[in-house]
Length: 220
Image (cartoon, rainbow, N blue to C red; front, side):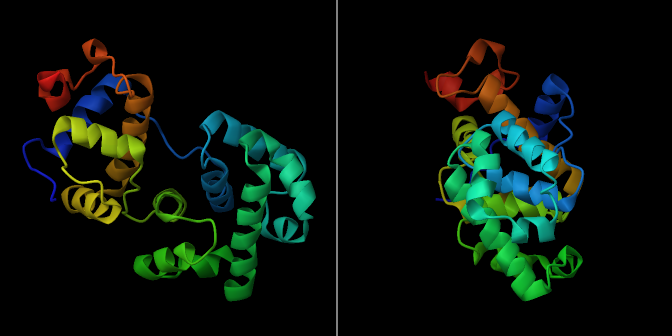
């Protein structure tokens, strides 16, 4: 089912921005750090992923060649704070292996790919799904794509913006309405913050800046 048009995304964005303020995502020093962070945050919170990134830095492992050469077991031990460390270590290794195989370990060569090809390439790597790929494309490569997660689905469904759960349909809808890269980045971050703090599984509607426009509140 297609998204509805009863509520404008720009109005949702403005209200969230006024309430929470700018989030300045994604916190990182390099493109590689954003990519590794997007893998480490899978299935956990940012605090745990951030601890793992810090531990990688302490061990001088946040560069392509070091990650290529590090033993898988050692890598898993270092990123233990992120959870599922063996799986995530393998996913990091998968990315590095493909980067070195296809682009001679050179991230600058990867940057030259058109967005559609970049996305297809990322999705061909075992362990990188659509949300992770789109986070990487948006924040590491500064392309106008919109990652869709459980928080986006929850908020949009409650607001009456969507009547579907299809990832690609929701992504394309947002991208058709919001084209500015900086707003896509901020909107993505604001949705996550809002759903973690207010629009939870059991929402705190009385504290919600979107309460008056929310269908969930009206129908409860």
